[in-house]
Structures are given as structure tokens and as C-alpha cells.
Length: 144
Image (cartoon, rainbow, N blue to C red; front, side):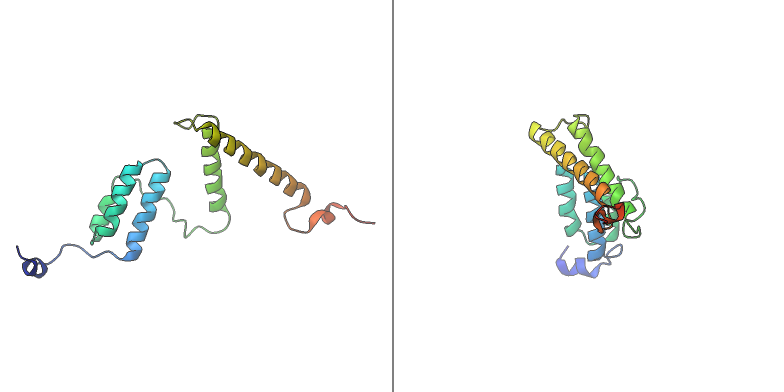
């Protein structure tokens, strides 16, 4: 078939937009972060995301992945951020304790332990000092 003949034939499906490609890319990265895709799989699929032209082709890239939960764009406030931090913290603690599948390197475990220690110390200081930025005055300190 010549190029002119291929262009004359109707193309199946609807062309995908850059925004749809970006949504697919984000979904693939989420799946990789959850451990559903290996690095080789994510690289291969990411290459295909920008090469594909039609929506149904993009859908095929994520067909074997679970449906996304509620969209983070619609969630408001601190709750989604705190939930994400909690999930990451739990994963890091599992790595620290060498229960997260592959045991982390000694250096990584040390860094995680130090970060957790700094986090706990900062939260302790913030709890005693106050989260509202007014300092210790609301505790009754500094009054004459």
C-alpha cells in the first residue's frame, strides 16, 4: 500500500490528546510506584505512550492495571497528602526492617532511620512549641 492510499483509508478510533497521554503516563508511574510494573515494563510502555495516536491504544497500555481510585485532583485538603506520606512512611519502615520484599542496603537503612529520627524530633518540638506559629506564648510561658 502506498502512503497516499493509507491516508485515504479511514482511521479507526479517536485521536488522543496530549492531556490523555499525560493521564496515561501518570497512571503508569503510579502503577510502577505501587510495584505493579517493572522498570523494563514502564520504559517500554512510556515509549509507546508518546508514539500512539488513538485513545483505544492508550487504553490498551493500562488495561492490565486496576482502575484508578478517586482522582487526586478532586481530593481536597491535607487528607490525600497525609495518606500519601503515611503510605510512603510505611514502605520505608518495611524497608528499614527488611520486610519490604528486597532488603535495603545498609546505607539506605541508615538514611531512613536518620530521616525518621529527625521527623519524630521535629514533630515533638512542634507539638511542644505549637503548630500555629505563635510560639510558646499560648502555653503560658513568657508571661510576667
